[in-house]
Length: 173
Image (cartoon, rainbow, N blue to C red; front, side, top):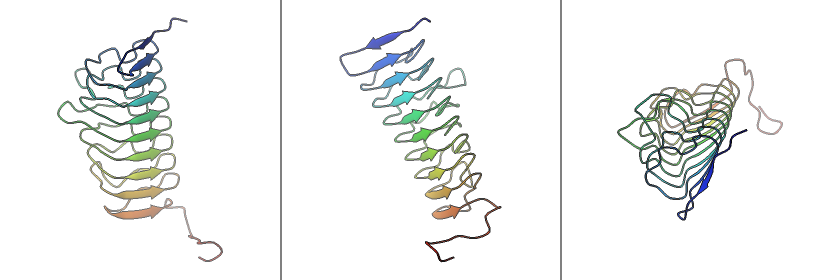
């Protein structure tokens, strides 16, 4: 198995074939996995673990200037990153989590396989559960919890999907 490992004085670490291959500036990035952060050119303090994490799937686009993102899981944070704006302080954990067309999407936390994939410009969302999503690509301040749950509106909390029939607080409904 061919491995590529590089560490720089600015704290950047790349482990895996083509990891951080296009980086031109930005300190403190950690990319572990095949093509992890492959097309990321600038921006620092990103941490990515997994096959093609924070990897742009569209030739010519990259995570330009994006900072303080954390992605873990097969292709999490990989999608069509916009060239015009950075997406900062996002967390995507899980298979294909937060794997959309990120372009100036900030402060999103997504946990679950295929969760948060519709987010493109949305900010301040908390999405938890496999296949859970906010209400729209530009959703703001939505908390969505549960398998297959979909947010309903900005500045709201959604618990569960359409199959949920009751919500309990301790023993009370």
